[in-house]
Image (tube, rainbow, N blue to C red; front, side, top):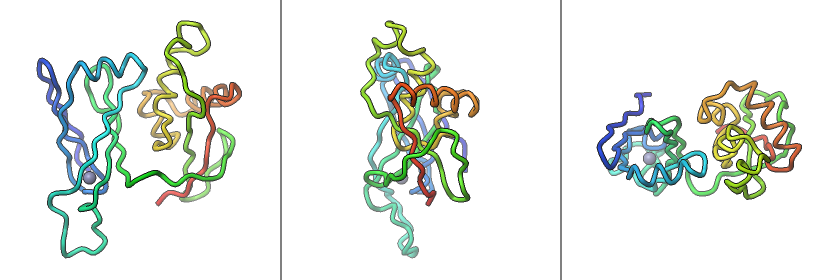
Length: 178
Ligand SMILES: [Zn+2]
């Protein structure tokens, strides 16, 4: 899979992010102000709906000509830290503990269950790291992907999620990987 690329300009960035559904790079421009505003809330995610303009018409399994979405995660240095492609709403299912051992083909998905106010950090209810991590727990990312997006080791993220789960802020579901 090719590397995601970013060109940084004065007012905007242009990025090429890998879409698993298109099996191609999608090109997205984002205003730096929009990113800075988003980062005030923790993590910035660009949501980009698109269709593949050049689907493989010979391939009946190629569904990239139907509208789908990529989430592109961008950090304070305007670099892409993660990309997620999906159709519609993600299917969810069984709730499990943070440190549940995954069976083959299974992933743990942390999901925020309560709205988190940025004020929680100022009030000392959450650390900034916890707040950033929760932003990645949008139901699209596996625990490992959340760790990657938050730029933390998986073990640390498991401990943080355990704590957040005790506070009733997040739940973990187990999903079969497609
Ligand atoms: Zn795509």
